[in-house]
Each structure stands twice: as C-alpha cells, then as structure tokens.
Amino acid sequence: MQYRPLGKTGLQISALSFGASSLGGVFHAVSRDDCIKTVHTALDLGVNLIDVSPYYGLTKAESMLGEALHGIDRKRYIMATKVGRYGEKEFDFSARRVTVSVDESLARIRCGHIDIIQCHDIEFVPLRIIVDETIPALEKLRQSGKVRFIGMTGLPLKIFTAVAAQSKIDTILSYCRYHLFDNSLMNIVPSLDAKGIGVMSAAPVAMGLLTSRGAPQWHPAGKLIRDTCVKAADYCRSQGADIAQLAISYAVAQPKIATTIVGTANPDNFRRNVEWASKPVDHQLLSAVLDILKPIHNHTWPSGLPENND
Image (cartoon, rainbow, N blue to C red; front, side):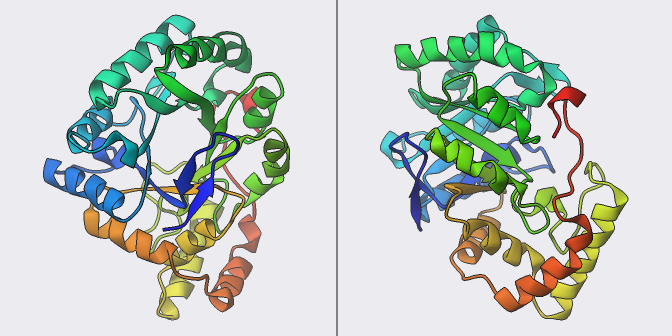
C-alpha cells in the first residue's frame, strides 16, 4: 500500500481508504459478520483511513465500526467522521448540535478521539453558518482534544474555495469530481495546496455509473450521463476489461489526491479494490474510454442550495 501526506496535518494516509457508508446498509442489507470482516480486511491490507458519518444508515455505520474496531490498536487507523447532516433532508450545523454530535460519534465508535471531523455536505446550508458558527465550535473541540483536524465535504467545488478563503481548515473531501468523466477537482487543487489543505476524493466509480452493473435507480445523474457511461462500460466489457478497475486505478494514480475512498461491506470486494488500486493504468484502454466519455466531460448534477453550485 502506498501512503501520501494529507496536506499539512502530518498524517500519512493510505492511497486507498475505507468508506464505511455500506456498513449502515445504505445500499442493501448487510450482515454483521461481513461488515466486521471487511473492516479487518481493509486494515490488514494496509488501509489506515476510515471515513464514516452519523448520516450513514442513520448512525448504524458508526455503531458497526465501534464493534469492528473493538480491541484494535488505536494507532492502526485514522478516524474521519462528520457533523451537520443527520437525515436525507436533516441538516443542523449549529454550534450546539455539532458539539453534541461529536460526543455521540465518539460514544458509537468508541475510539477515544476523532482524527478528522468534517462538516458534511455543506452546500445544503448558507456557507456563512459554516464559517461563523460550525468551524469555531469545532475549533473548541480541537482544543479539548476530542478532534485533531477540521475538514468539509460536498459535491460542488466552489464551496471548498469559498470556505477556505474565510476559515482555517485542514482537509476537504470531494466526491464524484475526480473520475473518468469528471476531473474538475484538479482545477482547485493548486489553491488548496497553497493553503496546506489536504485533498481526499470519494466515489471513483461515480456512485455506480462507472461499473458494469450501472447506476442505481436513485442516482441523480441525467440521461446523457447515464447512457454515455453505459457505452463506456460496454466497450470495456468488449475488451475483456472491467470499467470499475480502470476507474479505480485511474483515480488512485493521481498523486495530488492524498487518498481515494471506496466503500463496500464485502471483504472480497474490498480486497479486489486494493488489488485494482495497485495495478498501473492501462493507458490504451483509458484513451479509448475517455474518447467515449467526451460528450459528458466534467458534467455533474446539482446538489444543495442553488447559490452554492458551481
């Protein structure tokens, strides 16, 4: 496993990290044994960053992590969880709520402290709340020793640069903005680098679009994106390849992104993802797939308040 620095935090994190949303049964029913085995498999394969949220499975994912990590040396993993989002349309970034939320997460995960506390999907609220209320509250928690570093997550890229211009943050977690048809995350990396902010990316298969199975019904992508991704997946299949493997190897190969986060509650699937991440990019296949995906290059979908979208 390769390790990279996370901005100026001093942390060295695995190039591939474990996204624990699946532990909450977000996508389909999961078994307790599989969840625990998957977490242990990830750690045994050298993964050292685990990303979760109270929103995932409505606290189930954090509770499952608490079980899976019981008895494991705290030095073996870096814990990242979130505050502010607690339901599909339930957001509360007030100082009071995020302070309580951290205590609740610590109790569920049973990990002593949180390494990276992140404001979850901040595009759904006025950014002034994040700057004036949320981050100052998290700074107090940092001083208390409950959290070590402060970050934020979301889909639109402008939210990261807007908040970073007004607040001291340590990390950002972007999703669905660095993959085979959208690499626009790289447009803001230089400005984040200049501030010492560590960059993490999630959803290298674009929440299922870049898989042979295709996107789930709930996916917010429009018809053009969906249809074009199907064409790309079909082409990979015709070449005896799996587009998901190409997507993961492509994402992990970007050295400016500290880690790429992938989620599953199946230990065999996670083991396969680590294997894919360790393989070099097939540049001939990549070139052909990028050509197919040109009509949707850097296309995305709206998320959150209109004023917070790119």
